[in-house]
Image (tube, rainbow, N blue to C red):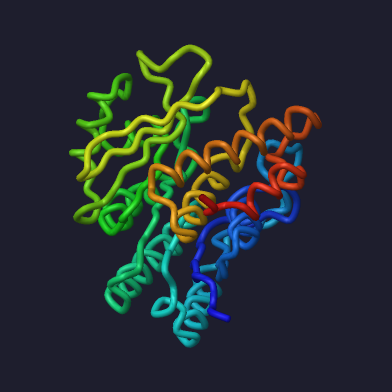
Length: 282
């Protein structure tokens, strides 16, 4: 029996609901991956509830967790390192140091940076100092980046309305050599009505991947999508195929939430769980 691929996932965690690692951990494990999950914040729930308890992980505590990861040699074993929401500038800096060290120790490690910082309606919802670390330190190391159009616009100072705008922004965004940008949740001027799309831009060109646009906006959607892309690639899918499967599965989780009247993505649907087990199958 061979050990499954190892993913290091550094992002938020909640007691109730599905965002950050609380959205991505189960799907990656169900797809057959081993996951080392480090929380950047621990909250009672997502912020749309009337109350929110918990706090960002203190920097000294987070540094101790990273030390434990180093002592276990996780960076040397891992195939993928994934980062998402970060709760403080100090932890952002610690993560940037760890990513740089991990990539140096393991040149085969692939780093997916999901720059979770804002969206069209709320705008920037992390301190600008955290967004600066994402732009200036984390994204330049990323082999895959998954910003939404608003985040991409903030990072590059561009308005994102067309594929040409995406291509210009991709050139402005400093990523690792040979990296791929996945612009998620795009509703561009020529996106077909009733659809939303992910657009992949990289050394091999541009590919567009439309999917039905469900009228459901829930926290954790992007975190789930990024985790599913990681899972698909780790199971042997091409990036384009992994993105398409991730869109399909994310759509299932959103449709289940809509049907149940839930305010979180739903990971317990029978069809969703069955599809996770088949992830990576021809």
